[in-house]
Image (cartoon, helix red, strand yellow):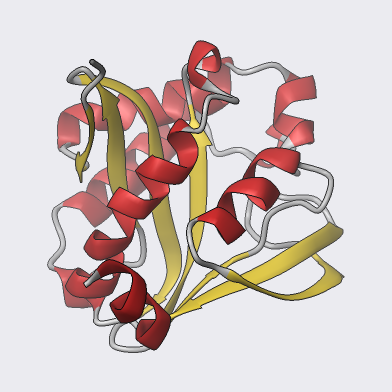
Length: 179
């Protein structure tokens, strides 16, 4: 039986995240709504994430959970645009391509949510995946997120201008589903 777990990111995990993005093909990156031309260098990205790992929760602007299968890291879930005691925006990435399309993402997102809501006292957790990226658009409703709207924006630093689907999970719904 496979053991699925989620934990807070450690400094030792930063290279997994940076390498995942930098080592992925341009085609794969575009499929998630991002552009390699907008990436920081590996070194800059490492420094940026490292600075966040060592901050306390109230000071963080980025926060990551690491997804594991049988104690091996296979992906991450992170939040940014953090406003403590208010809101954040979530991102989900399955690094190991052999683990995609197996339903693991839903389970791992569900296990990540308590870290976000409990550590940051969130009222709302948003996610704005690229409308043409089917994986997160299938995963989010199954994890309890409600669809808000479809619109065009550049949802983050590494993203191009695109159509996104905005989802939200409120604290009230999180408490109903996960407590």
